[in-house]
Each structure stands twice: as C-alpha cells, then as structure tokens.
Length: 300
Image 1 (cartoon, rainbow, N blue to C red):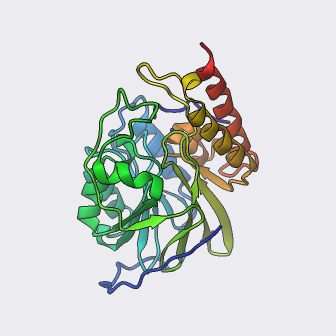
Image 2: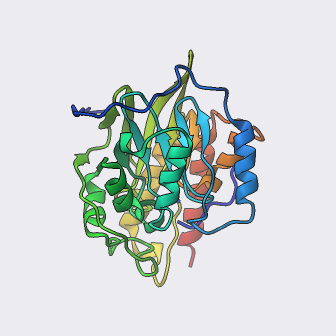
C-alpha cells in the first residue's frame, strides 16, 4: 500500500473563548470528494521532490483539506467557528500555504490553532511566519517545546548533525498526550509518538460529510533515519522509544490515514481514487514498514 517514505517522516480537554471577527462564509454542506482535484495535484507535482515545491489545495473529505506542498503535508480542518492547521511545512513555502488556504475558500485569519507533527525544518520551518500571518496560537506536547521555542534541533535527535534549525516560535498551550485542541466543533486529540524526535505527535479527529462521519489519524513519521555519525545501536533509549511507538501505532484503527510526507502513505493516490481512501489495516502496515526500517538501521 505504501510508497517510498520521504526523508524526514485519552485525556484532558481544553478550550479557549475568543473574541472573534466574523468568519468567512462556509458552504452548508461539502461538495463530493475532489478526486479530480487530487489527480490535478498529482500531475502538478509529478517529478517534484523539493520540500517547498508548491501544490494546489485539495479537499480530502468533509472539512479536511490538503494545503501543503508536493512533498510535505499541511492539513486544514475547517469550521464556521474557526480552523485548525496541522503542520507548517518550510519557511520558503509559508506564502504558498497561505495562498492555498485562500484558494480553498477560507481566510488565514480564521485559523485559531496551529499544531505540529515534529520539530524538523520541513514541518515547522514556516510555523513562525504562519503564526504571524494568521494570528493563530501554537499548541504542542511539552517534549517539543524546547526545540520550537529555541529554533534548534535537539542534540539527541538522530538527524541533528546534518539538518538545520528554524525560526523559533512561542508555544501558547503545552499539551499532554490525550489532550484535545478545539476550535468551535473541531476537536483534535494529541497522541505522543516519540522516536523520530522527542516531541513527535500524531493527531486524531472525526470529520463528517453530511451523515457520513470518518475517523482520521495523522500519524507522525516513524522513520528511523540516522545522519552523520549517529548509530542507533549506540542509543538503546531512542530505540526503545521507536519500538514503543511502533507498537502503539500498530494497534490503532487509523480510519483515514494521513502522514506528514504524503508519499509515506500514498496519500495523493488514495485521494485520487487509485487506492482506497480508507484501509482498516493502514496503521498496521505503516508500523510494520517502520519496524523493518528500524531493524535495518540497527545493523552494523
């Protein structure tokens, strides 16, 4: 089911009351799933591999939109009471993400929260710019806060030797695994899935297309990718994090699986109807592939 992974891969609820400007009008009911738009997206992104290559926005299902680049996901969940953006791609791509939100028919200023998968430049590089442009607040797990607020990759990160930092950003809400981020009727639940980074976070929610409601799981990268002189065999604690996360993900019923790099889960192909959009075994298959990569990374 899955294509080649790209380089980089319940509990307490909180709510905030905002004094908000009126939101842009939203359709009373969503149009049919945009398979034609997904096919156009695939055509526009054919052969493009840069993290910042722009892509057109496409509705995945219900109120869930893909507004990211050709190789890095950014997901917009919309409501009349405000929106939530998952991931911010690169700093260079931030203007394209804002343009995609507008092209999809929504106002960037109506984004209330931005949440993230993990603390690497290709997923949070545009976070500071998008926060400034939208006025949204940032929420993250406590383990991700040091990197997000310093703009520096953790020294314990397996990729720290060869990837750069990003513009720092203030975290408005510190989460625990199981906490929920809310905007109007939107409710996203954070799930700690550490390994790729200490603050790696997956997200779960339910979206409806009229009476058809589907569960979504945005599973953060499970890729064990050592760079420079890093060797997983020398870091049993990191290996233990990966193994625990892989076991957790394997047990999940993902519903509709989304990943920070769309190629890791054939997301575009599924959006275009070339593969089933929803697969009961998706999380198990993703975890199995991750375990194989971990075992390979452990070999001398």
